[in-house]
Length: 268
Image 1: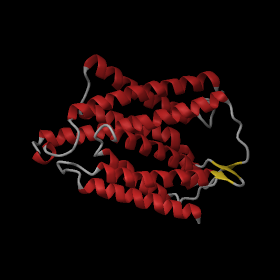
Image 2: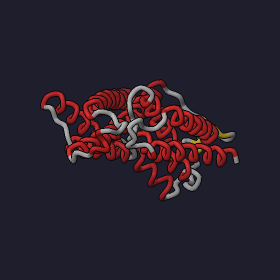
Image 3: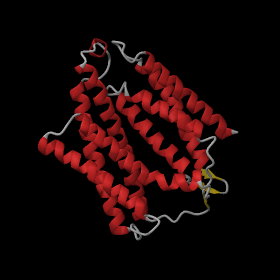
Image 4: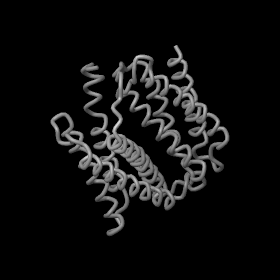
């Protein structure tokens, strides 16, 4: 009952925060930061309590794909909300809040119980998982910045006066933050892969080969874009599309097989 209550509270306040931001998306003064922070803080706290009660159970730790997705989503929401305190993120907030609302509600209906009665804590494994999670979150946020950049750029090229007089951030600011996040995420993903190859056995084992290959493909795309931007000034629609493809590939690497096994095939 507690988990259901926390889920409803989190999703409700995510929806309220999303609605508030969207209602003033093209307003000159933009959405009220105070109202947005209050609504999102309640949602984030409820989301955090939901995670604690979902993962740490009396009979073990539930590290199912749904709970891992909830954790990843919580980190992304927290990061984007924190960034919005200093930099305009008007287009990003409704996307992350809306997705968080859908995911928290969906968690009630998707079966997810993968209990571990004991966790073998190894420093190398913890470092690899932590770096991988952080890299993924940053690269997903970079992808959202790419979508925001494309949206603003397209509206400006159409000479849309609504966006000129709106609260949306300047195009060059969005582009600069996009590549800063892309570079940071790519570096972290590189370190995560290196720690995996150096300290972990079985990166190319049968059950992990697809994850490793997809991660390397995603890394190659991210790295190529980062280097291409610095060396040749790559930018624009094709860069954004490439970043989205890389983010989708990395998502498949992290969640694809586990989703099929746990949710589709019910292998708990």
